[in-house]
Amino acid sequence: MAEEAKWYVVHTYSGYENKVKANIEKSVENRGMQDLIPDVRVPMEEVVEKKVETEKIVQRKIFPSYVVVKMVMTDESWFVVRNTRGVTGFVGPGSKPVPLSAEEVEKMGVEKIRVADIKFSIGDLVEIKSGLMEGFSGKITSIDNKTRKVNVAVSMFGRETPVEIDYTQVDSVE
Image 1: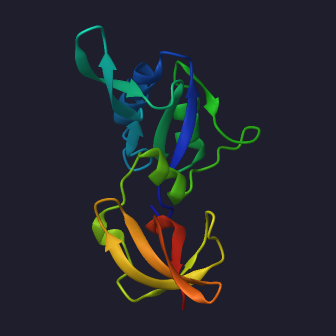
Image 2 (image 1 turned 135 degrees about the vertical axis):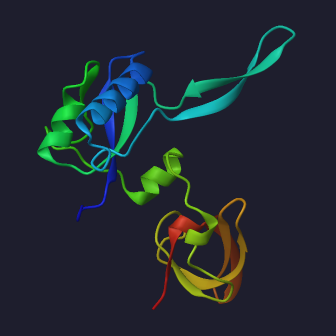
């Protein structure tokens, strides 16, 4: 397949997220469309529920009424997802589904970027492309793979100021 699969957000009836996920997966399997729709997820997070004297960890939907689908957008794949029972439509203007950007996918926690995907090293010159420091550039002084943050020495008001930001917010300066 020439086109790469992208993540799309599908709106569902409230409480039908897991059923929609199962129905899409079943349709994909029955039609042999694993190459067009390789993944379907209901984004979940672990939270601690506190009762009077007990605490327990439970799974909670991060985005109730939404399912994310990794798919190659074709008429057939759109039809399968759109006509799944419980689906009310794709997220996007009008009837045109809009794929999530890599940054949105990362922030939603749908797909984690592996440490190997970090393309920077200490000493690299980078430009900050989003956030409060957007437009500033500087040199990477440290990288924390665990938190996926980089420290950048930015020149402000004639002096070097260390700034800690998410590595998705910087781009290499060529």
